[in-house]
Every structure is written in C-alpha cells, then in structure tokens.
Length: 227
Image (cartoon, rainbow, N blue to C red; front, side):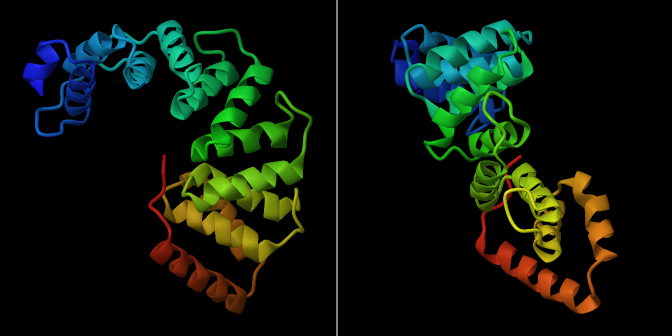
C-alpha cells in the first residue's frame, strides 16, 4: 500500500492515512495520517477531504483550525458525503469556522438524516425540539430521536426519555421515560443518572422490574452505543 501511495495512487494514499489514523497494522500517527489525507485530497478524493476536515476539527496531526475543518467538510458535503453533511451541520449549529446559522444547520442535518446518519437524526430532533432553523415540532423531534435511539445514539435515547417524561410529541409515559433514561445511562450517558433516580421514586417496584427486564433485552439485540 505504501509503495502504491508513494507512486501517486490516491486511494492508496487515503487508505494509508486511515491505517495511520486508527493504528491499523501500523503504529498510530496522526501526523502521518494527516499528511496522507492531504495528499489524497489534492487529487480530489472525497473521503480524504472529509477526514482532513476531521483532523482540522480535532487538531489531530495539525493545529486545530475550525475554518479549515469547515472548508473541507463543505467540500465533501457538497459532493454528497453524508458524514460530512452531518459535520457541516454541526459547524453551522455551533458557529465553528462559519457564522452560526440554524437554518443551514437544519438543512444539512436533514440531508444527512435522510441518508440514515444516526447522529444527524439526533441533531435534527434537537432542531425540531428547540425550533432551530425550523418551526418547533415535538412530534417530528420525537420521530427523529426514536430513529437515532434505535441505532444506539445515547443522546437520542436520553432525549427520548425527556419526550416521554414531558409528553412532548408522544403521550406522557413514565415507564417509557424510565426505559430510555436507563438505556442511555447504562450506555454511559452519566447525565441521565439523576433522571433515573427521580423516576424510580415515581414508579412501583413491579413497574421498575418490568422496565429493567425490557432494558436487559434491549442490550441483547441492539448495537453498542455511539458517542
């Protein structure tokens, strides 16, 4: 692979960058990963553009630079790469590398969510829930959170608990709120701890046992959480 990369093969350069980035078959080295992603980017490889954006965003192998991260996410997003579209939405949402723009954030999250990017579905739910870039719509927020929660996004699982607790977009149901809070907590989302305890004071022992049984079943059949 390295020989092919050094001879100018764009895909070999990108794949070598991936190996260095993740430490696959070679010692992890973000600086080398960045170097090879950049080389592949110069040949127009869309996945390399996305990964170059990631390196700039997190300061991996290069000084952190939100402006450059935005630039490369945008380049890849405009070519249809769903992961880049989601990350571009995050840039617009937080005003990182670009002026904060909720309308643009919503637009890019929606495009990525339609391609089944779970994190984008969660962010889209946040937009609908809070009226960011779109008219507030709790039913749509619930739908988006549920789609992302089923795919293992812990923030979506937690937000689904909020929906059930407050009856936002769905009929109020304390057992279902407990169910999703507990799943998110067991997936490592520590913010849910107090919510779990609060609802445990509302439910009967039998109700809690019923929910815990369902939660155990969940972890037998669903993917590991994404953070």
